[in-house]
Image (cartoon, rainbow, N blue to C red; front, side, top):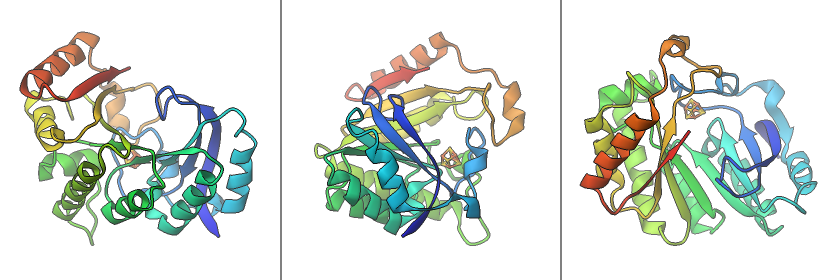
Length: 248
Ligand code: SF4
């Protein structure tokens, strides 16, 4: 079976924080987030087509050292069959499996969780699910797909995560981008959506030094440490049960 895979980082501790993992980058994404650092990964390019056996044997070279594999991208859930097949193969080799996702494909996430193929899931909550804001941040609306349908899918994903909490480690990540995703009320709206999920909520510092989908964001300075700390305190006052972490 072939899949659109742009590459592998053999050993990383940043995708599944603190866990030494091989990271497989799936090509192709259904979003075009303005702050995305992987503009080259967003299309299904012919040059990405790879036999998944080749991917498995590449990961195998590091199984003595790596404890886990993380599927990242792009959006891995757009390639359901390849994703499930790779997860099964690598799980059979006693590797823990992590998934980085934008949450747009709840059925695939549900299937992976029901098959117990996932140990860690990192869901990127791009913004609150306010239609205008979500559309502006993700540029995910197409001629065929309305933003409201996409946000409905994200709600489904959150529901599925709630149903599986305790069986899987859950991280919910929000990139704080001044001028785009930074207002207290918007961040609180995300808190409201995730308040009943047993998860770690990560406030990820925006980085304007790397390549970006929206080059205009190059001029936006990342939020200060104190801004992020204040935001965290503000959210914890409202939702004391949430575990909030700042990642720079
Ligand atoms: S940041 Fe957005 S556009 Fe980039 S890979 Fe993730 S979901 Fe896709």
